[in-house]
Length: 306
Length: 146
Image 1 (spheres, one colour):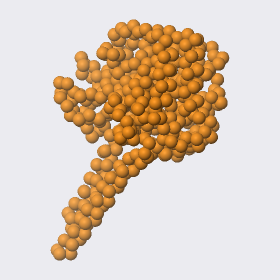
Image 2 (image 1 turned 90 degrees about the horizontal axis):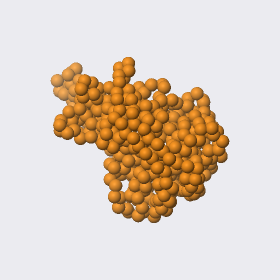
Image 3 (image 1 turned 90 degrees about the vertical axis):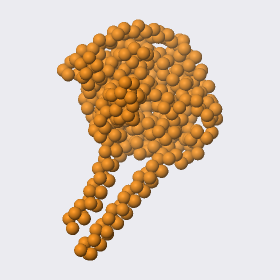
Image 4 (image 1 turned 60 degrees about the horizontal axis):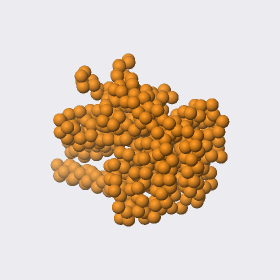
């Protein structure tokens, strides 16, 4: 009986040790997610006026670059490698500010290449994204190994797009949770600016109007971008991009969008709910406005990737 | 003897099982929900939702702003984490105007997804709450038809 009791005590001791080690690992993993850099935490240096909850609510209005690149491809825009940010530029980005912006830029380029079936050529972009994400302590959300394997074959485009997009979503959610919203905002801004840069640099296209309207519609996103950037305008690095964004906003303000909301109707099709949208919108934008937006986008984008 | 062995085994099992349940409310849930959008849709965004118990009459909600393009067919999917009782209700609004919901109040029926062929480009609000204000964890997925 005494031997059995000792055995029980020993087993219990093992369990207690196992539990302690397990909890230590949990704590340790939480610690490892904390920002370790000094230029990405804004709570001590700036006074954000928009809460993290509101940032999370607004930042989702920046569209996935899949939408614009798909439209460009469907509209007959020819793929132009020289429009993308050069992979060798990555070594220039030494601050977290530049790293975050260009993580968004390279992410958009990766998506764009995959939409155009250039999956195999995108391997260097994958590497840059992994390096930038690791430097920003969010590399755990970018599944480089799987993406690298899938990118060896042009037929894996859908999987590559899904893993890339969901990885960026996870990064953004995590950054906001960890009170590093400013980094999440910079990544989104880089993503959005690169999308605009690709969309405003189209040449011989049969259906330009659809692309122009999509660019004009970015007026709604522009308003939110300005709101997000204003949050950090007191920080040195952010002052310039906020000022530049305001200049771009002035051009977008010339776009007019009219709405005609009508209550939708619903119907059930094979057990699924389908909404019949009875509303319409008209976006008014002309060549002159497009040209001015294009010029300002180029100025901002050149600063980001330099 | 067997009884003594059972206690630590149960404790160890609890430790690992509780870890799995926790992770299901996060990445696993998003991955499995995204897997259900169908091969004719492209994933665009996910919207994590985690809400504590609130009042039945006025349940607390979580909001996201999204921008939708005219001429695109979108699909909104919603999935609940298994370990919570709360059933998520996803609703789409244009301003204060209701556009779509995964819950039809008149039939009291929940739909796992809704298809929305958008005809009005604009900023929309996506709202999530749990039926009867129950505690819950869920994810919403936005996808577009290829």
